[in-house]
Length: 76
Image (cartoon, rainbow, N blue to C red; front, side, top):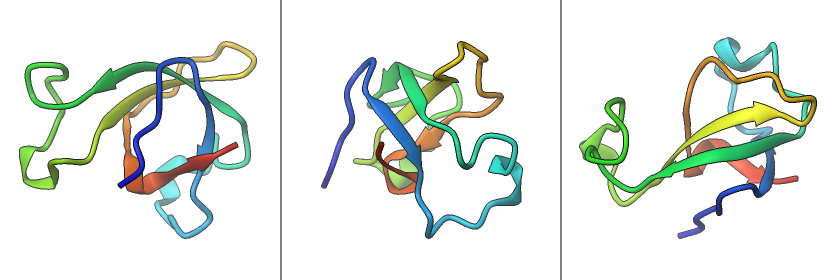
């Protein structure tokens, strides 16, 4: 399983068709927080463990309005 690191540059996976991600889908994103479990993030879904959950911002500094899991991201 792949896990990403703090400050790593990523993109939304092209296999992910969640329309809520359209506003930042084609942008380079930077990881600002890494959550490994519910103690690290209140929105973490333990049923998806061992996936990590990431808070993100765009390369221009705009905060992304939702957090994404490992399977939703690829390396930029």
